Structure formats: structure tokens, C-alpha cells
Length: 205
Image (spheres, rainbow, N blue to C red):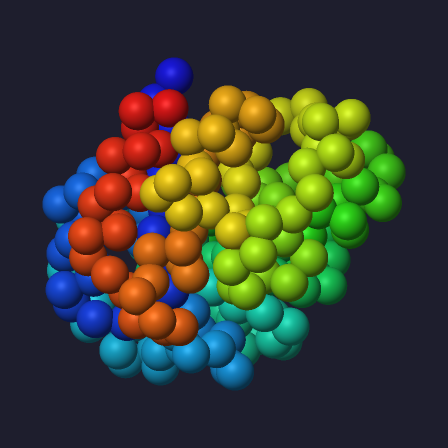
């Protein structure tokens, strides 16, 4: 089965174009404060306008009020909202009702602590399981996922690189992968060659 691939934290037209040309299924723009990859909504809109309709555009948010999320997502012109934080199932429903697809990103430890009933209540479009500290580029202990894998398709993030992504896909069996720091030459600076190599490695897996 073809692995879904998202390249996240894009800040330049060159990185967006390289991701699309490499065959990424989705590109992400960080609209949360405090990251070296943060862009404002007008910049995200300009970058997203370069993306063909066949590629998903994702606005990434963390610990922001839902009304702010909706406002910025609309200004940015993205089709999907990715939530990293303590959002509730009602928050996810609010974002979906506003017309956005929702990626619910959750750290591996927090996911392991959720009951199956709580997981079903979110009704997100995409479940993303990440390292405990998202965006830090650190891989995580996969033992909890191997012991109790999700009962649905899910996306893997956290410490992935072109050299490690194929092995992690084989080990954990996600439907897709999401990368940011693993395709950077320095923190916040995307390397176009690494983007191409990552997509190729994920697809080869």
C-alpha cells in the first residue's frame, strides 16, 4: 500500500515546490507561535497557493484557542487543521463543522493513556502519533505502540529521517509518515535534497 507522506514546517517557496515535485501527499505550515518554522497566516496563504489541489495543505496549531485556530486557518487558506495540544472532542467537532479536515496529533505516551472510548470520541480525520516533544526531531520508544497498536489507520511522526523512515514503517506499520526536522540542514531550514530523499525512502518502504 502506498505510504502517505507529509512534509511539515515549510517556510519557503523552494521547499514547497520541492515537496510537491517529490510527490508528497500533504504539506504543513506552522501557525503556532514559538517555533523556528512559524509563519504568519498571509505567508502561509502565499505558500499554499503554490500547491496543487491534489496535495493537502495543513495548518499546524498548538495550544491555541479554537476561535483563533479557525481564524488563522481561514486566513491561511489551508484545507486541513492539525491540532497539537489538549483540545477536546468538542473542539475537533467545531473545527470539522467549520469545513476543515482535522489531524489530531498526540504524543505516544498520552495516546497510550487514552481509553478506547476516549479515542473514538474524537472522530478526527487523521490520527497522528508523535514523540512526546513534537518538532524536536527525537525518535521515541516504540514499545507501547507495538504492544497495543491503533485499531485504525494512523500516521507516524517523531525523529524520522531519510535514513530511518523505511525501517520505522516496517517496524510499526503506519499508513503514513510526517517529517519536519528530519529534512533540515539546520533547525528550521529545509534541505531540498533531504526532502526528495525522504519521500523516495518512504515510498520504497
